[in-house]
Length: 276
Image (tube, rainbow, N blue to C red; front, side, top):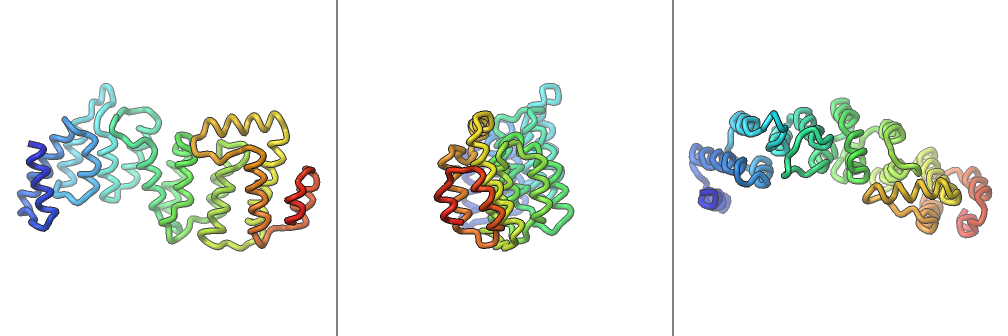
């Protein structure tokens, strides 16, 4: 039956549309079959073009949730809400999945919530409220994947830079401020921000990281954090110095005198001194 119904949808997609009531019956039947037999197919059905009535889909998904064991199609329910613009409702459901408060084997972990937050445009209090509410848990769950919330390449209106930097400073779990550095670099490359305070802040973070790697205790903490956070940039001294040198050579507006004194204080950074 599933194969037959899917074939009907395929035929319709090729340019032979079904009558509206027939399409609704086909998609609703598939929804119910997917809930019981193929939950991994629910998200593509609900987020793509479909004829299922939203209220019917919501009711069917909620009915399939076992409230005693808190298992069921939570991810599909969240995807449905997101597909009709109910972002708060969707993110609240995804937050329970990320926190381990409910179980849905077909869920995509933190990624669906990250993608929704990354799709929000800047310049809106409502967008920032959602990011501020849900991003901390995502940063904790999958730190470098959650960075996409702030450096989304599809966002045409940027978030407020100072708000993002203050937020990352508060919630960043990494000892060498890698998320703040990544956002500052994004400001420069994506939005062409050319202010001395931001360029200097980015270079200072790189200087701090090089200085920290010279201290055995701090270097050990950095190495442990790199291991604990998939996607973290390399934190060997060679990698940290390469990032610092790149910034010194490419950024045009940092405070040269300040950075020069700091680099001298670290010692042994001949190439960096030449660049300065």
